[in-house]
Length: 396
Ligand code: PGA
Ligand code: ZN
Image 1 (cartoon, helix red, strand yellow):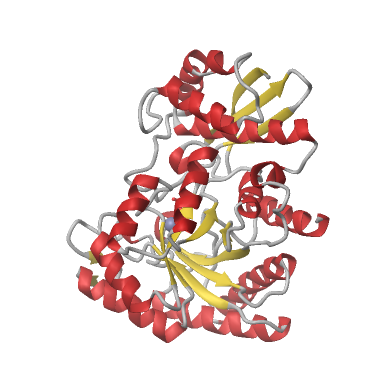
Image 2 (cartoon, helix red, strand yellow):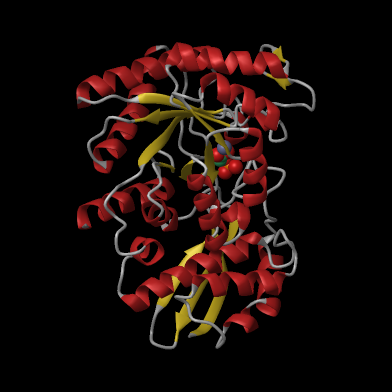
């Protein structure tokens, strides 16, 4: 039984405050987790409240419903009680930041009581055999760095890596090679929020650098490294057109542009190529390129099963980004993964641009047998997850 839920304000990787939760149980189980935070957040995400407000409201409304009332290992009931305590459909009262911290901390306390790794508690005894391929953000801009590229993230995708460890080191090597290539060109380099380089170059130049860096590192390491993108197109869309630094594209032009990029650079993954309300555009692009490329909905689906159901009906995308804090609980995130898999959509577990040392998403990816995880390439709050994947892989 959960005996105590403690909440505190801690730092995230951007230097902003976020919620940390400690969950303790009667039999000595303990779990601690903290909420991440987005910058290019989707319009339909659950609500992140200011931290002090989230903590105060949660202490008043939710903590009394949990303490002495529910088992930490009973994740569905914990998450159900969080919903009931909140009473809205978007965690507008207690905050999705408080909810997700408690939900994840309870899961860790449940695993602790079992003496099992978190991924095993979440996924069952038969999980842990497969590791997700990490998508490594190595060049970026958008809302994550002013002065960087228009496209938010250029991702290294080590599809041929024989192990998660090889994949993690490949992404770090591509990150290093990108810096070398930029320096050779005399381009000053700074990092964006997720640790990707945010150079003041055109997107077309970023593609050339990505092509070279992935090819060179792939040759060195002896396996194929492909390229992926997060366009984060809702941030470019002004309500009618997509506004790039050097030109404007209509929705049709945007679809054609992305389809051409897929062809030219053999992109294996494209996230949010269109605005978060454009199901029809997503469907058209998916039918044009979807056989060989994952078209992934992040702001489009916001880890929400209602939004995903709409997408499935339209044939929009063939992959979903899963961010537990977009929906507020692990149970809701699991429901999104399950609905996705049932309908042939690939689940991709993801960090946020504002992160902490929390490693829950690494375990979530293994527990759900997700084919991909997006959690950066370098930087302590990113390596926390990547190194946890290596630990999981080397312990089974
Ligand atoms: P965010 O960005 O965490 O700032 O929303 C990550 C993403 O768009 O995938
Ligand atoms: Zn995204």
